[in-house]
Length: 85
Image (tube, rainbow, N blue to C red; front, side, top):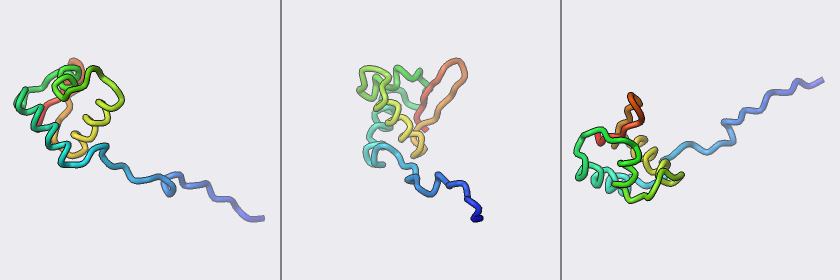
């Protein structure tokens, strides 16, 4: 009788990559930096500065891309805050 190996789900998954290209991410980081400098601001304010009306899936993906590129930092003390690195 043949032994069955457990399927490895990571073999079939695509590698993670940021939602937006680096050039666009730098533009977003520049926009944030012009408004807030290196100050930490609440997530809803950062999203509005970037031109989003509300915390939406797209806004979260853009912020995640900025974080993946190392352009912003996130602080979870007393609520989520975002700052430009």
